[in-house]
Length: 181
Ligand SMILES: *[C@@H]1O[C@H](CO)[C@@H](O)[C@H](O)[C@H]1NC(C)=O
Ligand SMILES: *[C@@H]1O[C@H](CO)[C@@H](O)[C@H](O)[C@H]1NC(C)=O
Image 1 (cartoon, protein in one colour):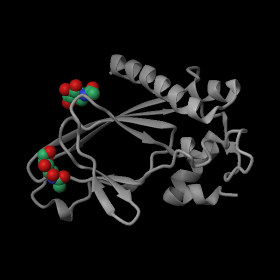
Image 2 (tube, protein in one colour):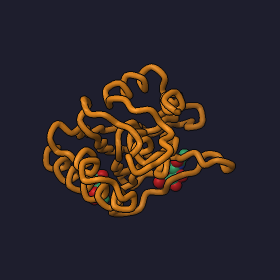
Image 3 (cartoon, helix red, strand yellow):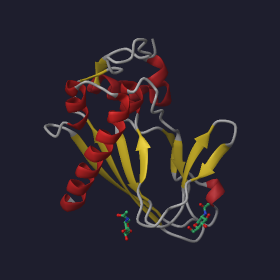
Image 4 (cartoon, protein in one colour):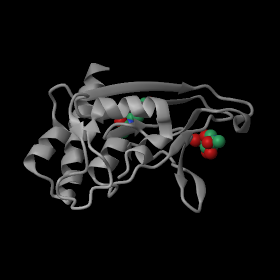
């Protein structure tokens, strides 16, 4: 677990560097996003036993991830679905030796919605037991989150990561719209 988590930490740092380079943010903001000190690094293990009637069961209810980035290993069994406007729910097929990278709410806010979150859910499988390993990466809870200073028209208010997580715990998918300017 420790070794996996450390590898995920390095990978999410590198991904964030690539993503933030495209936004041309300040060095201070970059440090915030990739800070290792007090950063949140959460590993979540999910087990979805096979289910005779998948359409009658909930795997993981629709949601967006709260932190900056999520790295997900679906371990070869499909079940992850994303909601695409105008199309509905669409399956994300597992690709061998690849991770699914999800943008979280904090990156949505920081990028002023340039990197938008996607609502997703997990379905159970009729014949296969599905295991997934999700790594969530985020800045320290006491730090502030706001759209990068490079955006002249920030669409979101500034608040601490902790305040946002408390709001999310109460308001779920409404949290982002509640802090819209
Ligand atoms: C169950 O898993 C198989 C193999 O990954 C896949 O083809 C099928 O679409 C899955 N069913 C659901 C409901 O995701
Ligand atoms: C995902 O997990 C499976 C084990 O369930 C492993 O074989 C595979 O290498 C992992 N994929 C990545 C990209 O690490």
